[in-house]
Every structure is written in C-alpha cells, then in structure tokens.
Length: 120
Image 1: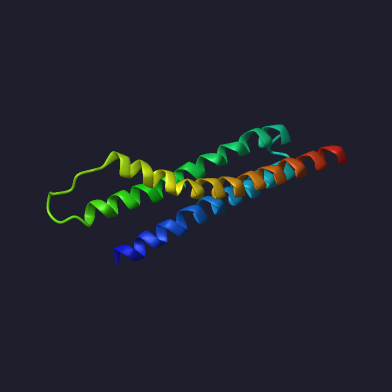
Image 2 (image 1 turned 180 degrees about the vertical axis):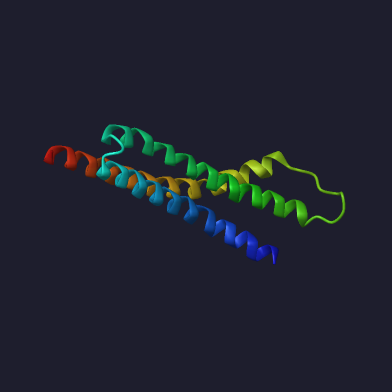
C-alpha cells in the first residue's frame, strides 16, 4: 500500500503541478480575452506558477523521507542529513522538467499576448 502511495506521489505531484499551471494559464488567458485583466498584468502574474515546481519537489522529497522513517521499526530511526540532501539532489530533475513545462506555457502565454496586442 505504501509503495503505491510513493509511486503515486512521485508521478502525480509533477503532473498535478503542470496541470495546475495549465489551468492557471487558461484562466489568465480567458480573463485577458474577456477584458477583465490587462495583458501586462497577466504576463506579470503567470510567473507565480513557478512556485509549483519546488512544491512538487518538496512533496516528493517529504514523502521519501517519511517512507524511510516508517520503514524503520520502533524508535531506532536516525535522520541522516547527508543522505537526505543526496536524495534531494537526486530529485532535482523533477523540479527541472516541471519548471520547463511551466516555462513553455509562460512563453506561449507571452507570445499570445504579444500577438493579440499587435492585432489591436
């Protein structure tokens, strides 16, 4: 059961972060098209979605640390800082590819906003 949860978090957290960034992208674009949000404001607000990449990384890391704590019987668990940091470094590609997907969405948003400004 616990291994299924770890796998779900490992794959689900980055996917959920990119899905949330996509929804945020669509909401901002819709508000700009309706005229309730200025294009410059939308372009300035979207980079807040980059918070989702380290949040996904943190969730995966905390799940891995919690897993190692739960795998030790009794009260004999000793937290190893060096090992936790090595795990965090090993998980950095998760933040990189999540952040890259969000960056692509940001560039697409900026290009759409720029193209709509040139039409007006």
